[in-house]
Length: 482
Ligand code: LFR
Image (cartoon, rainbow, N blue to C red):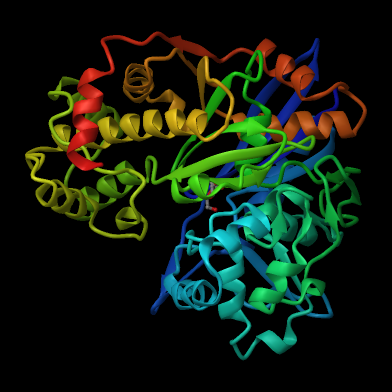
């Protein structure tokens, strides 16, 4: 039986266990198990069901090992969140979800003491993102549970710890904390001092590719699976698996969020980059991802949730079909705006933004979804243009990876708005990036990140969209809201 690697990819709305088989310089990926995820509101707070995720992961690994011998596993997840363990290694409470608004007061406290410029220079991370780990920790440190906390582990490291007992702070996920300096790839003592966070609460910092040892004996019967720290931040893994042919590309990791950016070797910490909303997170192999978070398909998912809760039909296929038939660029909203961040009645929020900016309120679901997709495409284009102006690489192609790359209308609109070719795929970029880093750590693949990208390009699942029309209608639409 061939050797398999298991990728655990934990996203905002679900978690997955996939197996990857590396042969003939290509990866074959198979989904083994999928289980739901999402913030769980209790009272005024929002939590993550970490043990539920863990149970899904274990079930997935058991199934995977029945299909074929699994030799290693890597875990990647959304950014910034963490769990706390006590000196006995027990999980302390249910981790909070980053959309819990407890952080805002802490963010204000730090920003009252330091300018955003000062904060940005310490790490390269946007101090304006209220969900950053640093603000969550500042709030946490005021809780009655805090004196019991021995260690803080980021989501992928936490799941890895539950599986194996091995601890570590993988660099890409740690970089989303706003406590790591993207220039040195080390914790920032300056930032830790500013926020009064003791750096001892973190586990040892490790680069992706670090082998952490075997899973707990007997957990997955009949296996000897090794835990490998991969690009623990899903976006880092997704960008590692972007089949770019050279450095002249922008990526859009498109899912609940649209993370739009470029790959660099050094962070850009200029005041202009700060003002434009860019952040410098870490990627694999010494890279920095210079990117900006747009609300992404969250806009559409929240519309669907609102319609479903009202007992209406909100089938994705039908909605996209209606959107494709709706008139283009009638109304657009700023997909980068914080207005859309929290859970809420999204159709009303969008209608309100249209009214506020003097544009027609979308009258039916097709028009509403069209407004969302036009707005996202517009935001993608503006973000990519700004990256080049801020000192990023000249962009010749836009790679869309993740679930959103299956949205043909969004891919075409993005090509049109950018006036650049869009290469869409792979869908499961995060899982593939997770697998190739494991395969290299286990000695099955070798070479630099360009060599790994070739393996992904050989693995198929990519569609190209050429730009149509001109930039003019997009510029006009932008002028209504920016
Ligand atoms: C995407 C993502 C983004 C991060 C957001 C919140 O899944 O990881 O990169 O900013 O989730 O953690």
